[in-house]
Image (cartoon, rainbow, N blue to C red; front, side):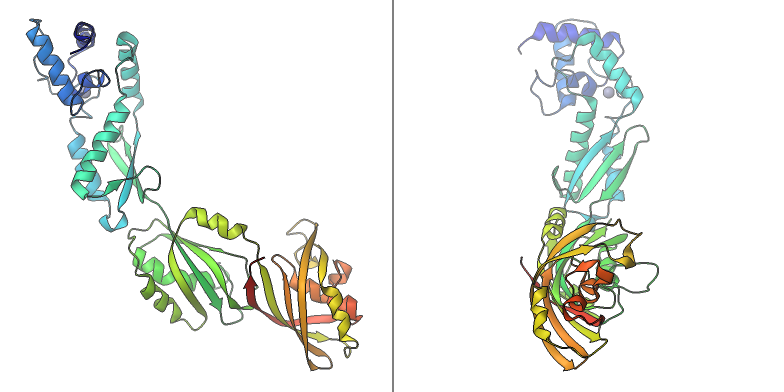
Amino acid sequence: MKNAKEIMSLALKIFETGDVCDSCLGRQFTRVIRAADNSERGRKIRTMIGKDGRALPADHKDASCPLCENTIAGIRTTASDIVKKIKPAGFSTFMIGVRMSDSLVMKEEALWGKIGIKYCEPLKTEIARELGKLIVHKTGKKQDTEHPNIIITFDVQKMSAEIFYNPLFIYGEYKKLVRGLPQTSSRQFKDSVEDIIARPLMKVTKSREHVLHAQGREDRDARCLAWRPFIVELKQPLMRKLPLKKMESAINKSAKVRVARLRLSTRKKVAELKAQNPFKVYRVVVDFETPVEKPERLKGIVGAIKQRTPNRILGAKPDKTKHKKVKNIKWKRINTKRYQFDITAESGLYLQELITGDGGRTKPSISQLLENQAHMKEFDLIGIKKG
Ligand SMILES: [Zn+2]
């Protein structure tokens, strides 16, 4: 063994502080002595010292270790307790976190003050590694420090662990077939697109909460007849295996919402989904105050639209001006005072104000172009196109 003299003299200094356990002894020499673990490393050092004829305990008989306070000796029990707590269906990968107790950190640092830190490994690292090994062995699951299904945080002082189940993300596309249904859950309305989609998923995954991340949103009173992409986030799922095809049919039993193309997704994809800025095609039925003349003037709506924050939400939102593009308009006369429009526009355009003009706050507008006050009767989203 290299540096045998130095190791022995350091070990003697360690024993001056008390009879530490094999792991604690070995841990101070992790980087210089090869062994399967710190405990084996500690035994090697004791043997070495014994052979050298020094009067030291050949093994650690005293039940209490002054350095780790028997945290390492109790680690098998700790691992068993943790395994009993985790729902096995809730994960296939995990990560260990360790919250150290202040008193143990102080003792460790005091020892390092005496012997230096040249060869050592911190106690926290050993606890995390040994717990990880034992949990892999007991459960057959894998460790993953980048995208673990669950995070196990072991609190050394409390000698207990908390389990955090990372959320599940499920991508899909939906259509909303009825009016009067809000997109997201709220206390005000008893049902929503989000609730209808999440209900069967929550049941199967035993999750605690859900959040709908959709690409844009439709008005409560508008239908969405185009497939709108979304990702539903299920928080604290105790089950991660999802029969997605079955889930699709369960959701589609609702007469109000239809989903397709469900698949597992990630948090990163949520940001990508939100960053996309597709064009939307709206079908709008509009009533005019007087019979419409020269409808070809409607072509003037194509181009950039200047919109100040609508009167109806002013106060809730600051007064700002935004510019959104209208790409195309098609019209169909229903009668002299009622028209149907298919309008292709950039996401985020205030559609109602494009029709009414909002007292001049939106320019140009349908009302302004036809010099005839227009009112939106109803509208649907009928298409979502990549910008
Ligand atoms: Zn110890």
